[in-house]
Length: 394
Image (cartoon, rainbow, N blue to C red; front, side, top):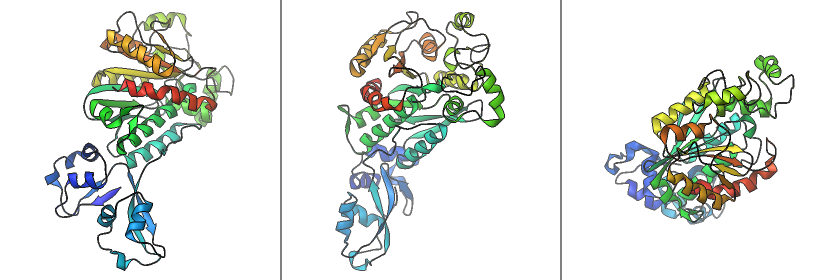
């Protein structure tokens, strides 16, 4: 929601007027950090509100309109400073703010790259303090989006959809973002923790879809220009529901230099729907981007969301710090999954992160069954994961 600055207005005035944390207004635009920098006529965006058009009906008053939108009269007057109650006419349209108090993301639906982008744009329009940047591109030039929430504190990366047929991890994460933003802008708790406390104590770096080309392949089929090649790589099948790799047939979570040579010897030797680690580590644009992000940001914690098994893998070659065990125990209690220290699998993003940074890293296998997991598990998975997401940030 946008409002126009008037003479004498301050950021503090707006934060009180709209009942939102002062820090959120600051983060909507870094240039507004100094209240004295506000200028008459300047437009600022208030997080957690939408601009709405209201049509006057017979008998309506400012009070009635404000109440219908869960706003106070002063807030309504600011947006309509040239209108008073005696000037309202039936059928006249006025702009009034609408506080967002419910989810805008469902998530419990087929969730390709285009759907994720649409939902991401909705979130950014309502919560302008979310920072988005293009961290890299996929093989097919789809942007690999990184979302940043928070300005200080520990850095936590959460990524989803490394594997194409594990795409359900993306809407699970996107719903969490939506619920976190709702709690933050409505001054609510989330799993018993103040959302503002989480926000001021941590920085969340989200990569909601690491493998957009692969996800689109599983959900929408092959792009026409690559159909013949992909059917060949898929062993002649037109059914891509079991495809894990990127669009070139490389398993992105077997691409990192953490015992990559060992995996190379025992995994497929050529591209295909799953498990091929590539001809060299970090050969793919998606894995190069993920490695560059970790090197640039030096995350304090990392969570990689996968399916399936209801397990949490938290160790690598004894290089994980003591904090990893504490977090793994808490995660297991919160979600009911089994925490497993070591597993016979190497060259994953979590493995490389622990090896190179010696910080806590986790691969979390959501749900149970055969990939791709059915959407009938979505609500149960999300209920298991919500507390874990919150704990990862505190």
